[in-house]
Amino acid sequence: MTNRRDAIRGAAALTAAAAFGPALSRAQGGDYPRPDATIRYVVPFPAGGLTDQMARQIGQQLGERWKVNVVVDNRPGGNAQIGAEMVAKAAPDGHTLLAVTLAHAANVTLFPKAPFSLQKDLRPVALIAGSPILIVVPQASPIEDFRALITQSRARRLNAGSSGNGTPPHLALALFNALNQSAIQHVPYKGGAPAVTDLIGGQLDLIFSNFPESIAHVKTGRLRALAIASRTRHPALDKVPTTAEAGLPALLVENWTGMMAPAGMSDAAVRKLGAEVVKIVNQPEMQERMRQQGFNADARTPERFGVFLNEEIARWAQVIEGANIQPS
Image (cartoon, rainbow, N blue to C red):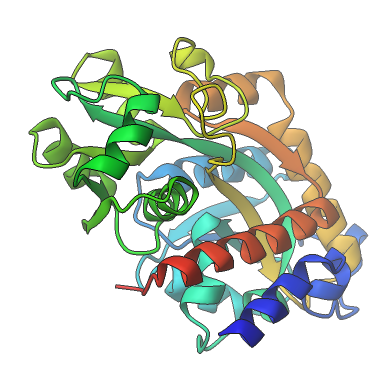
């Protein structure tokens, strides 16, 4: 286990070009995309979720700007591995793309024997946005604020729901337990919605929740937000403190989303596509739409996304191994 951890940490120090698979010289950027081709944007999650919403917005704008057909193809299952494997093994012509999230960075550690390698068979195109984790409790909970959670989680038995083993809410819980030396019990669900329903009903003590899954319930008073696990407060909940303000500055968790492509896609085509996605994300109207949906725009080029992705892989490897998290 230690050797694997060291290997993953070592990858974080590499540049994006060295850490991710070889870029074979195929079509030049000027030839991409083919005007008669359909770009398939694979989302390895069900339709309607966070990643799907963002992929559809990016795909629509990309199609309009480049005058090509962009189709979002939902391929859920296998902890987001089924869709990722499909893209990893696709032709590297840039016409099959993958929507990736924090889950894929965690999967590098969770699935060491996967039939493809995120770092060798895929390459970064662009980081798009992040959605912060919101720590929420039922409105009737005796835990009134985040500092009380820090204290009470060490003194009494609490349970926290999540959307499943190894998902961002579970990772956030594991990181909290590690930082706080607490032992909140994890209760996995098959999705975030049923976990939130049980939290509102009082069957759970708290959730480290994906922001969009709980914000509406916070605004209607069904849930109380204790803190947000980001560096800044969110404008939609500007009275909710950050975890740093509330006493645990190292608890920073965003369920980010980005775009990757098969490793053999040419450097020129990757740069062209990445630059276009960054332009789309940096539009003021797009950034405002993201904020309304619970995202923070975070456009990064292929090189910067590659460095970020390596860091995320190494960071969550430590949390997963420390908490002995196993895939469901």
